[in-house]
Length: 216
Image (cartoon, rainbow, N blue to C red; front, side, top):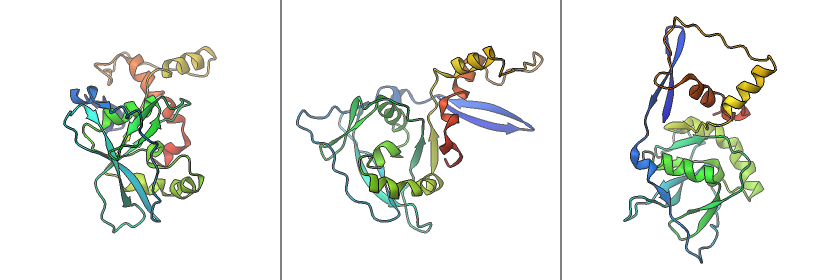
């Protein structure tokens, strides 16, 4: 689901659209047994990597290649890409992202899910866990200051909100008398057709607790 927030008068309403069915059938290509780890190439100053989907005969298979563009120069030509904002979590890499050159990059199950869900409609993506060489401290030091520009120059920012721990947080705060919820029975539920607890679960996602939210 894709959620949006719209201000109507002085009240906020949540709207949503259903993702394409196609996105539910996509899967990452399994690397060949002899596939080598990807070797990241150096980036020019002010440039970032983007993930571009490479068409395959089997349309359900997802394979990427890297392209680069400048985000520092406002006048520079750049492709229309989507920047992904999400909560990293503490998962270890459990699967791999196959690239068109035959190499692969270890990724978490969460990253794999995000990429396969979003790439159906957004063939050019920026996602920090993959587009920044996480094993290169010097590159990370150069790329992190560019992140504000990455989000600013993006054609869209896709926020990945996870359900699962929101209700637990609310219940815990409520039990400690730190949270008070006021319900107006005379007002229509803006979250229809979802039950309120489903929306509470999403809107209390750990994503909202990240300091990076202000930048993204």
